[in-house]
Amino acid sequence: MTRTAHQDLHSEQGALRGEHPGRSRNPVIKVADLAWLEFEKPDLDRAEIFARDFGFSVAARTEHELWLRGTLAGSPCMVIREGRTSRFVGPAFRAAERADLDRLARATGSDVRDLDGTGAPGGGRAVDLLDPSGFPVRVVHCGEDLPALPEQRPLLLNFGADHRRTNATQRPPREPSRIQRLGHVVLETRVFGRALDWYLDTLGMIVSDFLFLDGQRERGPTMAFIRCDRGALAVDHHTLAMHLGPGNGYVHSAYQVTDLDSIAAGGEYLNERGYKRSWGIGRHIQGSQLFDYWRDPDRFMLEHFADGDLFSRDLEPGWAPMSTSGLAQWGPPATRDFLGANPSPARVRDVIQALRGDNELDPARLLGLLKAVNT
Image 1 (cartoon, rainbow, N blue to C red):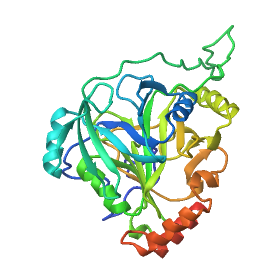
Image 2: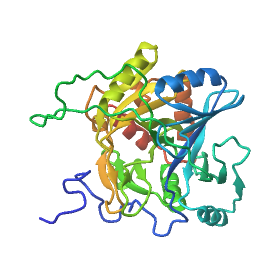
Image 3: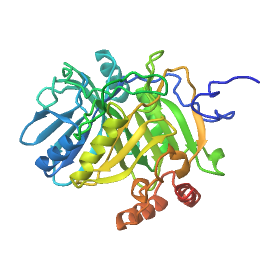
Image 4: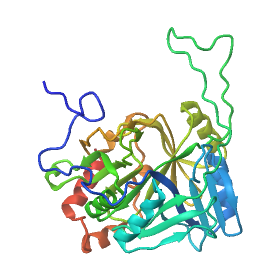
């Protein structure tokens, strides 16, 4: 039997002849990672309270901006600016080299501008773009990294006959999970195919896994887990994930913590303070992360994760059917809140507008998505 890149790895299926290759032949640049996410909220004090409870540290705070960070050296994780309403603005990706910004600006007809004076810790330069879904996308090259902060140490574990801990007890403190770094962001889009190709062609990202609707594989994928292309260096299974849906919007963002005990003890800390768990604790299939999802006071979903897959450029995309049962190897059933399946006037408006608009959602696709949610 011929072995493939999928044998004993991340997927039982690879691409069929003629399917999307999951990468661009000649991208403009190759981004190195997510830098940070940008939000607007009317109450920065309330946002900071949740941020500290969730496990962020504050990198900088002004009257109108809040910059949040993790413990690892590098760029901040998130900036929250004061605004009239709570909304997700867009992602910022980190360019591998300063020259990439010039190349990107020439290719897209954009300008390279200074980040000095914007409040970004360390300053730097940026190119501002707009993806096909309408999300502002910023590509940055930071002038100076933030220094590392003290870590939350992983517990020393005993495994069967492998006894690494003797004459000592385990007492993980009931405290916030200490965020290490930003891992990924998930977006919903009505123009999935166009948006996917834009991120691959413009930012040089590559697909780790595709999901398709049952009985509609010939129409192409409806979700992609996308990573940065760092060559032989293994990176997160996905830095960006996108799926077809009736809206264009933020779904969730994910932040790495030390281990399972950090997830669980930090979750108890959040629960005691009255925050709402959306779904967890469990272990995903695509990406393999241990996960726990929470809602902040403005209903944005954030994930604590640990122990995710790392892929180098060598692995080709996997293909799998899209279904709720395919979201986790173990854990409680996915909730309607996590799936976005709770009916609301706003969601009904999204569906009506999507079915009437010039996009990739039609009645067959909508029915397929509904079937996947209930599978």
